[in-house]
Image 1 (spheres, rainbow, N blue to C red):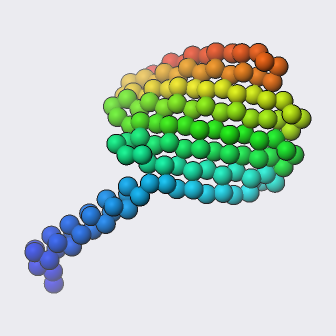
Image 2 (cartoon, one colour):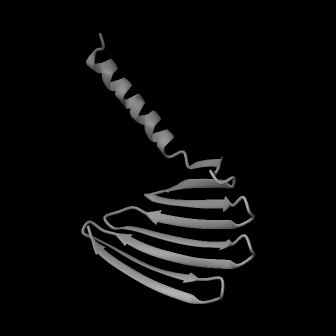
Image 3 (cartoon, rainbow, N blue to C red):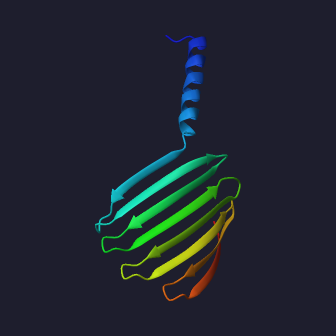
Length: 128
């Protein structure tokens, strides 16, 4: 039977181990897609509720896509993402998106530059 003293020390040791493991930093993985391409992702905990990540995807027919993002947690979670890619027939595209997720609503604005050089900007706002 554990005494109160032993139990409190066991609990403290468990908390220390979990908190040390939780702030370890990065996680990465790579896998093959259903269509024969490959996708790889990495996520890094930069501390203080800030996370950043990178995604790279290569298609079976030669297209590629790269995305990088960063999010900061708080009462309002703010995220930014930028991406670019090349289609299988060599056309390029790029864009970026900024979003803020609050307790009552979400707002998002983004821009996209298509293969022909045309540029679009969009804005969304919706309640939760």
